Length: 227
Length: 399
Ligand SMILES: Nc1ncnc2c1ncn2[C@@H]1O[C@H](COP(=O)(O)OP(=O)(O)OP(=O)(O)O)[C@@H](O)[C@H]1O
Ligand SMILES: [Mg+2]
Image 1 (cartoon, rainbow over the protein chains, first blue to last red):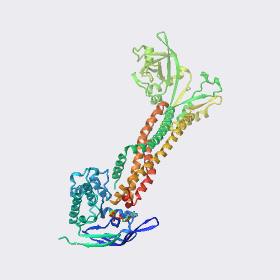
Image 2 (image 1 turned 90 degrees about the horizontal axis):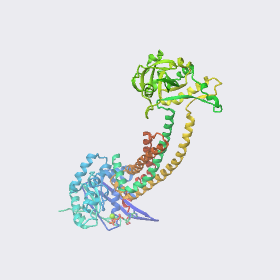
Image 3 (image 1 turned 180 degrees about the vertical axis):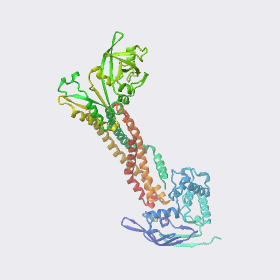
């Protein structure tokens, strides 16, 4: 489903060409639950943004669901982001003037889903993350954990190919973090592909596959079998 | 994404900064308001002109003879130029003319019960009734037969009924005018008899005029046209025809109410007003438009993160462009609508002072609304485009 080949990314800073990612090769299949770990500044977020089609590598090849991403135009990328990818950000990134339900409806609006249909769908996914009773709350009327659950609901509302979560528990206390991980585990059991960046070993322990990044290179890509 | 959603988003963002939005609209309010005022004043002036031209408002116009002013004796009453039968015949042939109403009038001292009472005597044709609505109080109007057979019958107004007959039984009474006996067949309501009773007035068939006064010339001619828009044309044609036919020793000329002169003086007033208000309007529209652009740029910058989130969720450039464009359009549309309200109030005020009919036509309102929306597009396109072109990653990272 996701195929990254020889991905290289560098930022130009002044006269310097600062490389951030080197020779990244990753294959991720449908149904996987992958964590990406590594020290701060190792390029995890950069990699996530490239996978999420909101950033472009300097060179390499990226094929997602058969689409050659690096040759797609802006309009096609919008469609790909809308249909294939569900984002969960560290700082939630909910729109402050929309309530929980409207936030979840947002990707469905851009997907051209009818009003009735998307309302029903948004209610379903909010119920799934345990927020059936918080639908008309504005983000500032929700706790951090609740906000992140709204964000997860928003990410899964369009039934995407995979969820991209960059430190989804990074801004949460351990209890809320655990709750989020339980939701992820449940979603993965139901077949959702999840790719997640984390700093915390305990969080990474939830995932069967873990990719280690160091200085922009993959130093390890392990699969483990849970017993 | 539907327009409804875009409008909802735009509205919520405008309402989130009520004061800022209101201040931004100010220039548009003043500008659009001024334009509405100018146009309404212009149209009101034109309507005032037309209504003066079409004096009674029933598409009629009177033809007058204006003697040359350097000949002070031309106005000697006996020599007053008149309209001949042939004149009238020619006037009827003008295609735009529906009716030619010929009337003669004379002041007579009528002796009733040893008392002389001054009375206005009008000789009219049946066409008079086609143009003037006359309300009967008692009896009947002059009819076809009265005109064709030159019956010695008259209608009198309520003033005459009071003065001549002291309101006793009137119908069937005989009144003597210039030695001829006339039977009163009806009493009609005076047109302008607001304060008590108006001056006594008698209407008789014009066909009897030669018997009483010994001439079949016509003193007054009024044209009625089929449509008000033809009034000017018909008037000009009639005046030209009469002037061509008039004998050369007659010093002066036939004229309809002098349109050109009126138009000129009216245009003079409106021109100055248009220049002043137009100046205010264009400056405030420019300042207002730039204000809208400025606020939209601020809004785009403030909402960089939001733009990034929307793009990550699948918003296309078109979605973002439309969202911000609709927002600026709604700003100018609200401003414009408030401006139209103030402008209309201004127009009513001016027309009240100038005694013109106030005229804020539906065309002006629709035009002003469209204009406001177009302003929103012109001054909103640059900020909206800036928002649409943002890279999602840069927008998301924005602090
Ligand atoms: N827009 C940018 N311009 C220049 N350099 C950048 C930019 N974005 C990221 N970098 C650099 O790329 C490197 C990788 O950044 P990235 O955000 O991917 O790290 P990370 O692994 O996510 O770190 P963290 O765990 O702290 O989130 C860093 O050294 C950073 O300074
Ligand atoms: Mg990071």
